[in-house]
Length: 120
Image: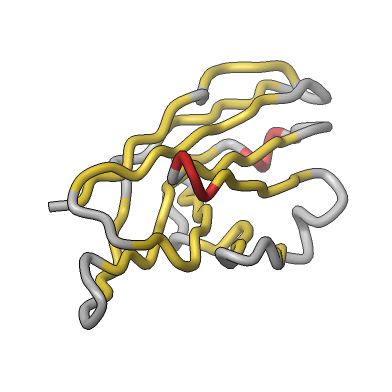
């Protein structure tokens, strides 16, 4: 079994910053793509950013320039640095990862989510 555990959420004022962390643990052979998604109240879950095991990242248009995704492969950890936060960034943020549990099998896992609330 593989678990993803997020941390770092909280309540901040508009313009402030937060750094989210997500650690993958369990029966892991290799963690491939990792990503952050978010879901605001009453809205569908949306992709925020992705990062490959080689460090190539992509961002949703509305986040690029304010958010930075990074990872440490040795620690199976991914971070999301969020700067200049806006009220519309308020959401539950979820970590997602493609994890190889052995040479032959890869599965997709989700964390339980961490709440980010931005007050204007």
